[in-house]
Structures are given as structure tokens and as C-alpha cells.
Length: 209
Image 1 (tube, one colour):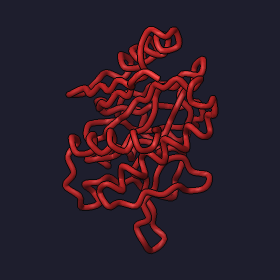
Image 2 (cartoon, rainbow, N blue to C red; image 1 turned 120 degrees about the vertical axis):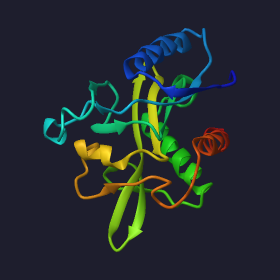
Image 3 (tube, rainbow, N blue to C red; image 1 turned 45 degrees about the vertical axis):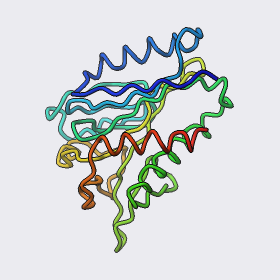
């Protein structure tokens, strides 16, 4: 299997331009003309609506641009201080199992958080990675939303490093009303984006093999 390419963008990347770039790369991967890719980036503040998004979960349509997207899931926020990792893998060579692929993405996030002594957890019936804050309180720290085309994956995961958590107030994140959102810095960890990127790269090799 050819080596996976890693790409890191500095500065905010336009969402629609990113989607176009992913779609072009998916076609190239499928044709055998380009290697698999993990693309690390940030977006300007925006909301995306996945294929299961409910109109009532968009609480403030005027806060930021809203983009309909073909990934799975509901509404989510992207913005500065949040590491987005778009993962473009050829699942024809990785088992053709979407459920297992999503679980491996979750394993990747959990392993990355563990590098900072943070215990990320799954929750039955809720997509993404959660932090137990004690006293029955939980908060989401990472989201997962994927799309598969001709068995090539795109979109991926997002991890809250130091975003403005107030920006999540314009939506019901991923349709979950009873719990909040958090970030590494919100948990009291002065973690840089570069440190998160280093952890993501190290744990990707461990998780995906």
C-alpha cells in the first residue's frame, strides 16, 4: 500500500474550496492516480448540515454561513482553534466496512486525547468523543462525520483544541441537547495545534496500521 500523504494548511481554509479539493482527490485515489491523504486544517467560523440535520437544530441561522454537506450526521460547527482532519482512504484495500472505519476514527481520537492524559469516551447512541466531567455532566470534545464514494472516504473528524465555545450556541451540536461541548484548553490544558498535530500523526500509525 502506498504511503499516506499528510498535508497541513496554515490559516483558515474556505469550506467549499476544501470540499472541491476532497472530491477531486477522491476521484484520483479511486483511479490510482494519487495516494491516500490526511489533510489537517482549520476553517473560518461556519456551520455544516449533515444528511441527518434537522431544521429545528439550527438555532441562529444568521450567526455564521451554513453549508449543506453530504457527510453523515447533523449540524456541527467548524472554526479557528478546532483541528479538522479530513481523511481520504481507499476502503477497497481496508476491508470495505464503514462501521469498522468509523470506529477506527473514534479509536484514533481517543488515542490522541490519551497523549494529553485526557480520557475520551464513546457514548451509545451518540456519535463523537465525550468527556465525563463528573456529577452526571458530559461534554463533547470531538466529532466524526464521514462520506464514502466508490469506497473512498472523505470528510472525517474534528477535535476542539481552543475554539470559541460560544460559537456552538447557534446550533444543537450533532442533535444532542442535554450535554455541552468542551476543548483541550477548556479542560485546562495549554495545548498547541502543533502538539495536537504531532499526536494525531503518531496515533494514526498506531490505530490504522
